[in-house]
Length: 197
Image: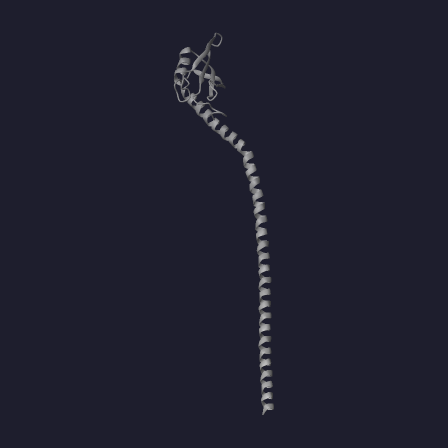
């Protein structure tokens, strides 16, 4: 009976050992599968990260190209700003001169004509902080009599363009042509051109 129990025990031990061997092999196989899956996940993650890096690098290159273009445009804008300022000033100056000439043409008496118009600037600096710019316009022309020259001065005095009285600098009688030539000067209310626009 002892032999039978011994055989039975050995058989049970072998069955148990085989069972443990199967369980341990299954556990090892599961561990290897988990390890392989983890490795595949890491490889896939590295591939995704590299793809993201390539995408970001491509976007960065595009951004850098756009940034260079933007800097070039900013530089060009800075180069053009003085020209734009000059053109704006010239356009405003032209508008003011047209307005002045229109104003003048509406107030010239019939028997008076202008042959020349000049403008000059004077900068006065009574103190270090204050700078006064005078814009003087001089009219040269002719008339058949002196009364119409006075009418012209009266028409232009205290106007939006000439807030102070105009000055008659000279008059001459031309005996051969029977006309008076004159020169009148007046200070503009606001300088026209680069400084005053």
